[in-house]
Image 1 (cartoon, rainbow, N blue to C red):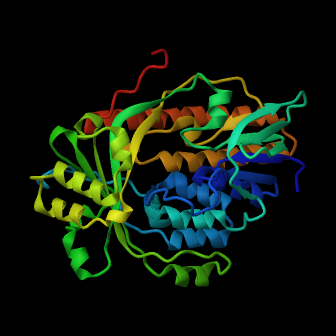
Image 2 (tube, rainbow, N blue to C red):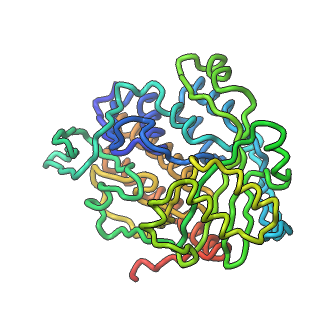
Image 3 (tube, one colour):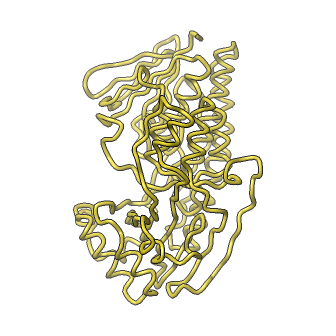
Length: 404
């Protein structure tokens, strides 16, 4: 076990992936998450995991956990087609495969399932109900994180993996801005159990991700999660120590529109029930292809929740200290190219490698600087690419320049 002790603020996918990598490497780590329990709130449904994400998980997870991740992921292929609102094909895209990775590098996973895998083996490292308020450092470089309940924790490194509203970022990089991208999304899912439900969805809409674009750039995004075996069977076969919640096949169904096309205020939108959100969506897809309207009408109302799309504004590098950032805390992006989670997983892999070097004798500041230089490059490239495609395809606000 190394003498290095790492504090992670935030128990999302990126923070947990980093914790897995450090735990596997024998580096002391503690994760502080503001939610009172791991299952406190709905954090979404289907996530696309691409080759970056798969490579990261393979690098940090113990082999049985990685095998369970691969076994519980859907293999929807690599098609990312776009249709108009009458289901006329606008653009067909086939992503290149990565033959040496599960699913050819294109997987669809259930977020809760992945979280449960990433939480496995971290019982002693996890601290729920710990909302970070601020941190301070001493002359030696040690960092003390302070939490809303009055408790604190001291370590050699503090990683801000605390999401888009990161308290670490606000203190550490007050110049780093997050802006409203002008889009509102309504996430939901359609259960695919049974022949009738499957017949509802045309096969051409069951690719890796399908975008249906209507008038005013309103859109519906569709993506299936289809399991090859039950969760309990997969975990019993591959990793008996990991307990997974059961789940059944479903179609993620996301409606999106410019905020001015939503006929209510944000306050009203976020106060609506699932049934009210479904009725709102149906009113905004009126006249679309009956198959699309049928899919929206089959959403489980209890599954629907709204999201405001936000994006970071790229910033230049900063002076490296014993505090750094990961995932949405530094490079939150619109979902237009579907790589936000994958970029956070990549962060975790790269940072794990750098902290292993520090534990082995490389100066900590030098190791963290190497991580930041690499992460700033690919992370903000993804922010720019996401903003550009979102602007062209669905009317996302253009990305502000850093000096605006």
